[in-house]
Image 1 (tube, rainbow, N blue to C red):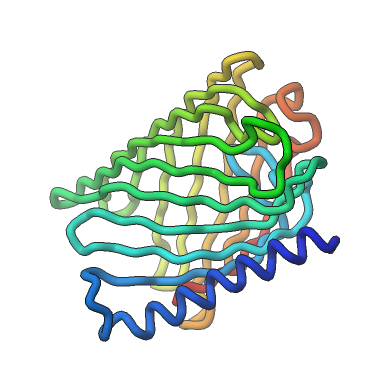
Image 2 (cartoon, rainbow, N blue to C red):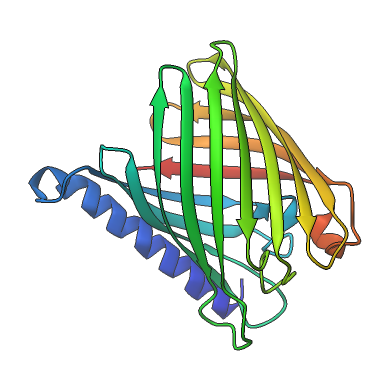
Length: 237
């Protein structure tokens, strides 16, 4: 792991440590709502079928604030590898979510910041809306997102992204899930992506997710869009 990626990993680990401290102290905090922290190690950082870590492992983490009234916000980070100056991604996000019985809905926005990039237009906004329904045996979520510069350090295209995901709980500590997505891009060919895998809860220690990703086009981003099997180990505090 090169020095930039190591610094990114240390930063993300620090964010997760801060979130842990926040969660432990929330009872004494004058702020409403709750704080949680998370940290993860992944064998490849995949977003919309594209590897943002050059098919290498990544360290991730952050913390979330939930107001208890539907409003939420947080910060999250990951090491990345684009082949330019970027070695870390830091996301600032906020939104509103709620439910009516088994129906869920959410609207939110995220700012993706690549602090080490020297080229203009590398950081960008993403806004999204999602709606889902829990049928009992399975939960289905449909979503749409608009991105000003889809992964600016890699593609620099305005994009509309449509997604559909399904999760099926098999037992208290295991579920299977899958998703499909379709990207309509400003200056590049449209493409589809999909994934399927299983998530295991290893007692109260950590979650283990094993997942297969693929797309229908390498013309969009070359080997960054190749099919791959990804393992993720995560913990929420």
